[in-house]
Image (cartoon, rainbow, N blue to C red; front, side):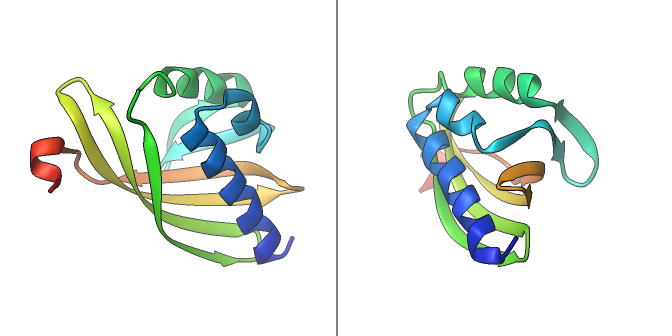
Length: 124
């Protein structure tokens, strides 16, 4: 898979994430995809676990991933985002580095590295 095709997959899943459209979002993931907290802590194994995690996340009214930058080489895509979330302590932002491996037009593996959340009063 070339880099532009892999980037298109990741752009599509980010758009579905921001729309909180679980069906569209899941269409970008392999049935047996793996999601890790970087470098190796398994967060979700398979589409059912990925769906369950995101159904909870998609309930957040302010959820939005703002793309800051995207790099790719072949089937590997790296996004830098600022994600607005509704934390238990209140609305805030978190810096996210997302690394995606795309196979056959779907995400097969993803690794996420998160910064420290900044609550709205601290986010400015």
